[in-house]
Image (cartoon, rainbow, N blue to C red; front, side, top):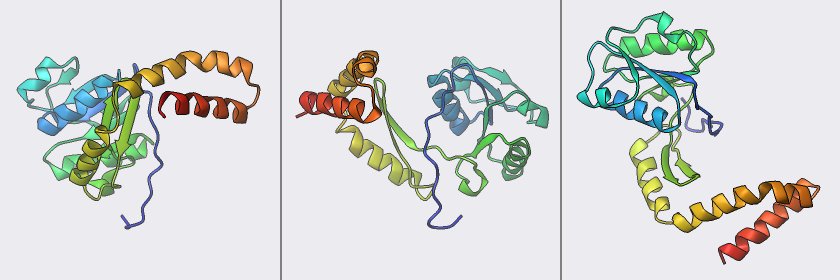
Amino acid sequence: MTDDKRFYVACLDLEGRRCLVVGAGEVGVEKARGLLDCGADVVVVAPNADPELKELSVRWLPRRYETRDLDDCFLVIAATPDPETNRAVFEDASARSLLCNVADTPELCSFILPAVHREGPIAVAVSTSGASPALAQRIRDDVAGLIGPRHADLARTLRELRPEVKQRFPTYEQRRAEFQRLIEEALP
């Protein structure tokens, strides 16, 4: 991976989509939690599981990873302590054009996971392109101090106003200007 590697930043709709986590240790549980938080249908494959996994609404397959585990998946995360298994997951996912993240191994990722702060409908994500997750988390925490309930309330209000604004203003430019005016009014 080069120093100037750039990732296309996107927010994925995982609601009801099957997502696979290979590995059920502390990292696997953290990844499963994040997927569940976004409404994903999470399947976890691992011979052994951290006790916390059993508290989550996931389907746990208590065995080693098999290629067929990727059937009908939208994305996959490999989070095992075994580099060979992680590489096999990545190669199998790549062969199927599936999105794949191998925890703490950016060179084996078709996507990376930013540090995220959520406040209601607002999600602020920080990435260092895999260079330092710890730095991304620190920046996320710093930014989190700037985003509060008033921002979340404003986001909800603006979402409710979208249909009316789209009806009143025929062009994208006019709608953008109206929303910018409303934001400036609410956040002087």
